[in-house]
Image 1 (cartoon, rainbow, N blue to C red):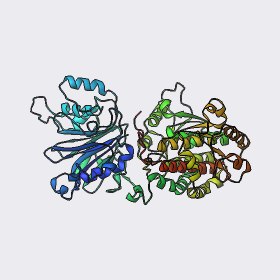
Image 2: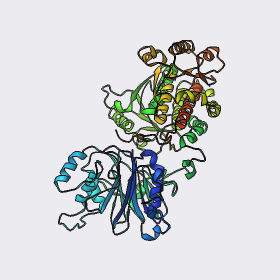
Image 3: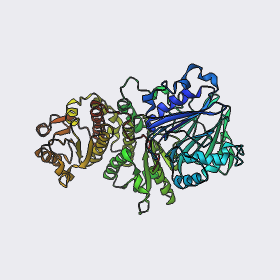
Image 4: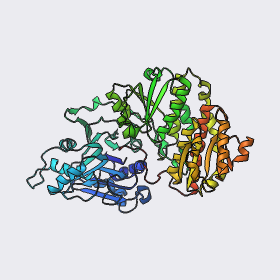
Length: 604
C-alpha cells in the first residue's frame, strides 16, 4: 500500500520525485524518502512523517529542488512514501533501503513473506541490516547477485540479471525499483503489486499509479507480473523473467484521458468534499456507460452470482445482492474478499468482483481462485490496466476519475451506479426511468445544512447507525465513513437487531442515526425509533421532515425526499458521506489522510 516513483530523463530528478510523492501520499504517509544517482554515488534523504507536512523545499530536501540542481547530473532517482507493515514509522525504516556497499538502493511496495529466513541467512553471511523492514533484504540479496565475492566489488552481471536472480529468491507481493550508483539506470519489477511506466519525450516515469505521471505524459505501459523493466534516459526495454527480452512494441501503449487539473483540489478545503461534489456527474457517467449490450452476457444470463469485495466495495456489493435478488429472482452470494480464499465451498455461477483501485490483493486473489474452477469473472473497477483488469475475464469501468481522499466517496457512488444498472438491465429495465435521472436527485443533498446533526455527533464516543432492508448496508457504509475520518466509534445494525444485545449500550450519550423512508418497512422502522427514543438516545433521522411521527421522535431530521428505492439509496448515501465529513471537519481531523489508513490495500 506504499507509493513508489522513479524518474530518468532530462529534468532534475529531485523535484519530480518529491512532487510525485505528494500525489502518492494517499497510499501511505508514515515516512518518505528518495535516492538519486549522481553518476558517482547515491545520494539519499529520508524522513519519518508526511512529505506534505515537511514540504518539498524544507531541509534537507531543499538542495534537491533548488534551481541549480538540474546542472548537477541529478537526472535519475527513486522515491517512496510508506504505509508501515514491518517495523514502526521511523527514519531508519523509511525507504529507500541500501545494501552494505551503499551503491544499491531499492524502494518496495508489498510484502516479502519469506524475509525472516532470508534475513537470517544474509546476517550469517556478514550482511549488516539497518532497519526492521522486510524490504531491506531485497537490497542485500541484490548486493550478492550483482557484485562478485573477490572483495573488489567487481560488476559481474547487469542490474536486470541481478534483479531476476533476486525475484527467484523472494516470495510475496512486490513492486520494486532499483538504482545502482553510476549506471543512470532504473530497474522495475512487479508481482501482484501495481506498477505503471509513463513514456515521455526523452524521459520515463515509474509510479504506483498514474497520478504522478500525468503532469509529464499521457502515454503509459502497464507491465505484466514477472516483467523486469529496464529504463535509461534514452529508452527502455522489458525483460520477461525466464523468457528473454521483449521489444517495447509488444506492449500496448495506453493513452490516459486524465488531466493534471483533475487531481487538484480546485479551491475545496479537502479532496473528500471536492469528490463528493463530483458525484452527480460521476453517477451519470457510471449509469450511462452500461447497456444490456455492453454488460457481459455471462453476467446477464447468470442464475447465480458470487460477489467478492472488501470494505466500502463490500457494502456496494451488499446493496447489489439485495436489489438483484429482489428484482430478478436470481441468487447472489456475497463474500468478504479477505475470507474468500479460506471458504471451503466451491465457486458457482459467475464471479463478480469489485475494487476501486483494481489492486486490492484479496479481491484479485478471488479472481484467481475463480479461474481455478473455470469460472468466468467480471471485475468492476476504476482503473484500466490495473491487476484485476488483466486477471478477470471481463471488466466494467466505473468512470469515476481519480479519487485522492483515502475515504471512498465518489467511487462508492460510481460502483452503485454500475451495479444498480446491472440490476436494471437484468430485471428487464424495471428502473430505467429512475436511473436515467438519479444523478439529479443528488444535487439538492449537496446544499443541505448538517449543523444540527453535527452538534449531536461531535460529543459522542459511540454511535449506532440503523436501517432495514437495503438501507442496512447503506447505514454500514455511513458508519464506516464516520469511523474512518472522525475517529468516533460507530456501528451499523439492522434495526430489529438492536433488541438482541446492543440495546444495553443505549444511553443519552449514544446517538443513533436512522434512515426511515416510505416503503414496506416504514411502520416497523418507526416502531424501532420509538424503542430507541425510550432509552434516551439522541436520534438523528434521514427522512421526511414533515412526517408527524418523525417530527415527534427525532432530535434532528436530515431531509430526504422519497423518490423510489434506487434514488433513495443514492441520496441517503451522499447525505451520510457529508455528515461524516462535517463531523470530522468540526473535530479538526485530517480528513483526506486518516490515521493508520491507506487508499489501496495491496497486501493481504
